[in-house]
Image (cartoon, rainbow, N blue to C red; front, side):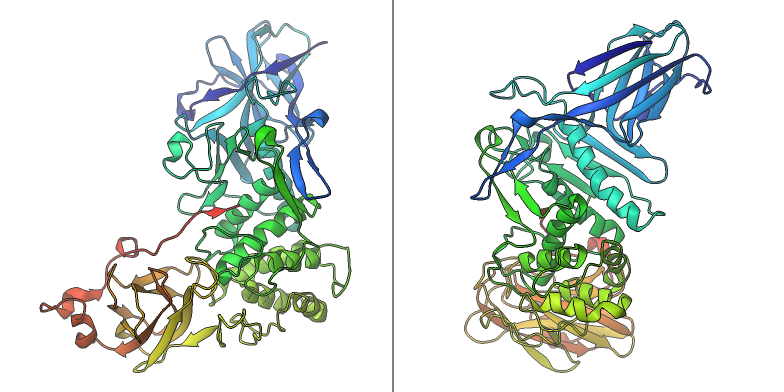
Length: 567
């Protein structure tokens, strides 16, 4: 038996699957059997006493590439056999005898009707990464052909192609997908494209030039984007970062995420939707790896990054608005390391079930309140233990999805109740605060519950209250999955706004905010019927009731800003 190992450069293959030519595959036992193992260089991280994180190239080791596509091609470029590696990176193919072939491994993790994950170069027409061996004659006897993707590190710098990077990313994704499969053996994942390139930098702009801003997940196209800028910020070996972004994909496709995205850090007081989404991502990275040390390497030689302990990091500004509080709560509910008020070890399946059931279908915006409410409703015997963990983060016992029992007011930035009620025929004074920052920080937005008693036309309006005002926006949501935007006020740069819309009987959610993020106040009103007084304030000329009632398709509405869900 002939065995040969190829250490290979990374190649690019345009995703033009229909252009591939296939020969009829041989049955098992026919032709010549070729087996092998696909491996890649895994670079671990080292974390010092000061929580600094660096890639540890001196301890690089070979890891197997699991469930990836492997093909055998003849000299005419035709595919003569195709398979996938197993959970040990091993493959087996049957090819025609005495034929010159080469083995090619794709940065595509595939299991029919279960998963399909591909890593592409967003700076090169979305080409798929592959590694391949040299042509050799298949002969008549079984032979072995191993392929290996190297890191490209020569001991001082990246001097060769970073072939291992796409396969390292896939392996991190496999880690979290296996955790999901353990919780639900019938799960089927939507296709996922991951964009990685050595050109991907921490600057916003055109992703086709690598200007991706940061590693992130974008819900509008359902894709992940991973940094690859050597000596600045690379994330291909930062498995917690990769899994964090996959967690946003999971929320989007299996559960629900109402997060508006944007920048965030562990000490921030955040919009509840953002706080939960980012805390969930951090917790999932620790749960998948069973390692609470979350790290992000960066800088010269990837040697000046940072790390934190998801479970025991210092609790700065704890509460229902803190991603750090949420990551600690979720990880404590999962793990078997009971300490302090943590006396419960649920494992992952209950958390998974809460996400795909109660969290997905809640009428409130997704938050720690909706998640814990769902978790408690499905784990009645564990309610006391769940409440104890939650209370350790300065959060009152959660009785419903709306956080009706909050006492932690974030130093006066938030007034109870967290969700206001907007009655028909009356006004609610809504104030915006930028104490903790703008866009996605606590105090930037107000949530109001709306109950429509009968179908008809209704008018929503925002008018200045007091001397300080900016640019009010009001957004109306359906409260059934997928929590679509029903309508939005049309004006930009004005100090008042309104819209009339035809609504069915039912419950809705209103979000009100100042798009200039000033410290301002407005009176928000809801009127039955077409309110000509409010609507005429938008335009001094005559307004036709027929043409200003919001009846356009959802995709043609003015849409609120949404930013990537980032690391």
